[in-house]
Length: 148
Image (cartoon, rainbow, N blue to C red):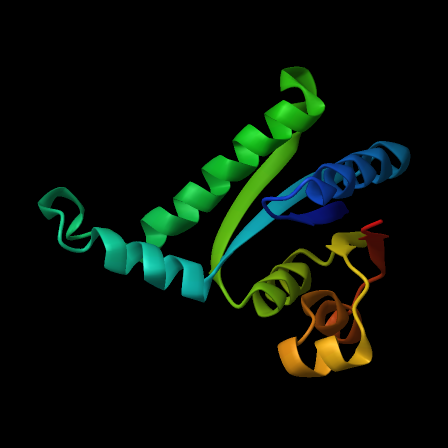
């Protein structure tokens, strides 16, 4: 089996990754670290470089590869090079909650590890909540590291 840790570009993701690593070691499972670039962020980036001739053919696949490269660097910086070799990096572009759930459905992990933050009910209703969507829709146990 595997442990799936969903990370992004914040300090809390270091703890998510460490929890995922500890679980993988405890259960002798592989660890998959996933970074999802939100669709909006990809579209903004693509629009910003569209006029540069060298980047006119920048593709969705290249953005996924960029997300995967982020994971490699993040894992190496967080866990160290020796441990980084045992982590499988994956990148995706799209709706963050949907992409994480899709990956979890494909991998069928023992645990999905995510970060979360406390929000008011109004904040959840107005802005949505990725962690809540994952918790409600994942078909596997979800471990959530809440922000302080």
